[in-house]
Image 1 (cartoon, rainbow, N blue to C red):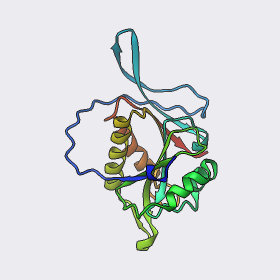
Image 2 (cartoon, rainbow, N blue to C red):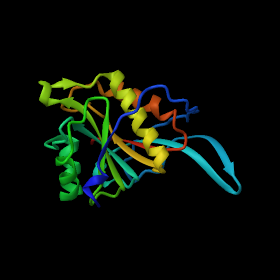
Image 3 (cartoon, rainbow, N blue to C red):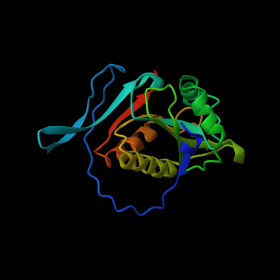
Image 4 (cartoon, rainbow, N blue to C red):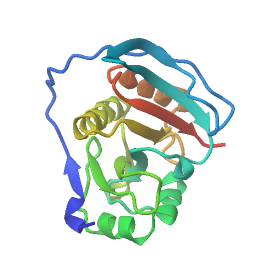
Length: 200
């Protein structure tokens, strides 16, 4: 894949998309558990589609999805935590694309190849800015950028999304608050199958 496939996505507020959301339930028996939450059913011909959200405990690098979300820094230097685990498995191609990227501000995201991961793309959402002295993403920024990222996925036809608890590790955001934000944003995208992966 060409290095040109990396880009930073930033969209002005004011989207006129109308969404309705799913209901949620928790799956706590690990990655091999069946999807645990479904909302309203929609029928297209003979095909039944069920909107789904699930929470699992495990290793996000082993999850099969269209897109894996990475908790990054603004320089896309994947030196620790989830970011390091992702780049180790994804391999050199992801790391090379990340090195060619310009600074990705808090509140924006970048997209790279997924390399050897079981995914098509990786979305990098910076949660900390070491270049400016360690500034952290706010909960409001996190909510906004996650919505932009899921909108991008939906528009690109990526339906299965796996995300960690963004910023709840080294950055120090409250894990329960982050989980609440992810759940609330997920409700706006009933077309997507979203898996929240909590580290064991």
